[in-house]
Length: 161
Image (cartoon, rainbow, N blue to C red; front, side, top):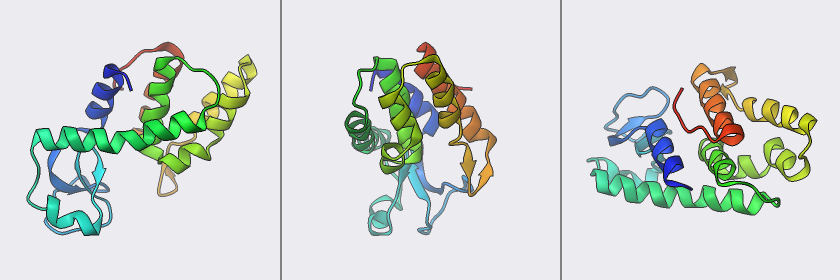
């Protein structure tokens, strides 16, 4: 990812030095499914004791780099056509949120690999922005995030919503 993409993804995920429940945003002193720390790092039950007391900003940066790498790799492996840096960045930011396998299996990846037409671009936008649900319901935060990613993909405009 470019430095602009790293900065944006870290701004989106927001630095949290103490564990919190990703569903509620509230700090947690006990492991729950969705326990998160740093820049969106999901804490497994096995990792809990390493993070329960919190982490430093330096540790969060290191954790972020190791967390981002599989998503960068997944995009690189899933996309078989040439793309520009800003398009790669947008796809990694999407994959970071929907998961590496979610991205690999997505209509987004299939359309990028198979279509450069204007009609394909319209279908790609619909497919991209359809990743806007949480627990089955449209989530405005996710809709906003997808729109920001789409601006990066189509216009190289990096910014929050």
